[in-house]
Length: 130
Image (cartoon, rainbow, N blue to C red; front, side, top):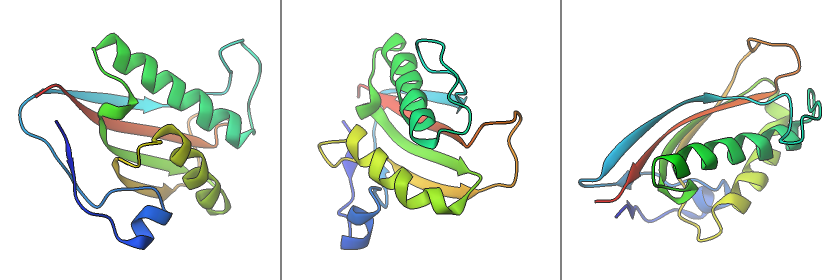
């Protein structure tokens, strides 16, 4: 079971935890996830909201294959190529963690991704059980 350190008002506003403490359990190291197509195969290149939703869906599906869910995500590193999308990402992320148990997180701006049309990449670590 994860223990979430108490969050300051700023950390709650930005939808992240300062630290998440775990003991035992199985650690799942997630590769960076990107998306330029949604589940239906539609092109979502250049659509930030659609890419965020698709990526969280991919992460959740991967975690379900390991016996977990998004709720088991304890840390994430988020790469965006436009700092103006930072606040929007925070709004969207809040919806994926309705209990308020947000992963510890870093939000980093980069200049380019591996493919044209990519606007965001998320990598993370989950702990399942324990």
